[in-house]
Amino acid sequence: MYKLWLIFAQTATICLAALFVISTLRPELLPWNMHSSIQNNSIVTIKETASNQEATLNTMSDLNGFSKAAKIAMPSVVNVFTTKEVKVPAHPLLNDPMFRRFFGDRFEEQTKRSSSLGSGVIVSPEGYILTNHHVVAAADEIEIALADGRKAKASIIGSDPETDLAVVKVNLKGLPSITFGRSDQAKVGDIVLAIGNPFGLGQTVTMGIISALGRKQLGINTYENFIQTDAAINQGNSGGALVDITGNLIGINTAIYSQTGGSIGIGLSIPTIVAKQIMEQIIKTGSVTRGWIGVEVQNLTQELADSFKLSSPNGVLIAGVYKNSPADHAGIKPGDVLVAVENKEITNSSDMLNMIAALSPGQTATFTVVRSQAEESIEISIGKRPKPVRQNQYQE
Image (cartoon, rainbow, N blue to C red):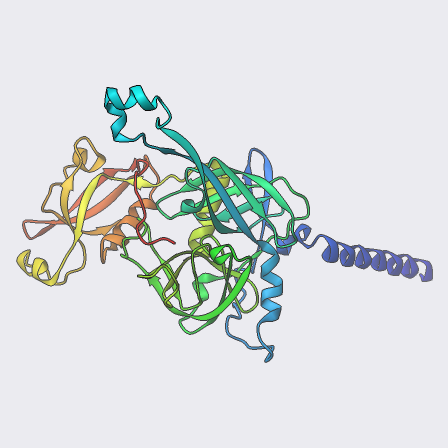
């Protein structure tokens, strides 16, 4: 009996020692720190707080400040430097034969290189970095600078202009990946930190609070669900991290409202509940697939609702239907009022876009419309949303 007990004690001691070494040197290998997404049979590991764990977003455990949160998150935030070739148009006088005779081709169209900067967040030890689409769009070359001084060239895995998110990858070892927090548990008034590279000064941390949640219909992206913060966000912060005071990522900084180009206290971040879904699709397939039915809509006002004799202005007015689109084949007509998708009520056009985008191309869904003051249920076979051609207006 004594020998059995001795063997058991020795085995337990060895197991505990091994667990301690792994948790210290490679915590991402532990099952409670892992979340996997598969791409080409390889494992992409990201860290996130447990789904049943209450996010501690506003507990001030350190009265001296938020240095602990900054210390945790800052190594995972990188500076992004991009360059691209820009063609300078030829001078109009070159069309004059006499001008060309004397000056030749010295004023022909020329090419020069322009550079820009932004930020990004390391989301896995495998080298995946989450940033904004507008930071890396059309870039010929991308360089990543880590907080520890290392630099590396990065390649674009994929991007989604409709949410302004992109994923790039670097081939470096020992990358400090950030832990994903629960943006769905964030509350107005919670303290947050914004980390990025404003104006190319280098990594900077600013502090503020969450000013609003669920900001939509701002005309910045097609799909909007922003966290608004008064933490200072300036040019170069795009793609950087918005973290809670435990150092967990809750948003990707993407845009500001400003007439001067500087922060006036209205910064917008894409919540991680959205960013994580887009990121995983990009890593898995290189792009994002959304449902589409092919209609143009406008929000209902109270006046429009009264004219259609509706009880409330909830829903959207079908202003146009694309020819040969899924909606056209199903019999949707201009003038219909779309009030529900799969029995889920529609409040406005943003709700409609998000509901349809969540549907899988090829599936059949039920759409409820009001036509001639009577409700009708119409079955539509969902199509795949075409790639947009769009420029964002308010991004820094």
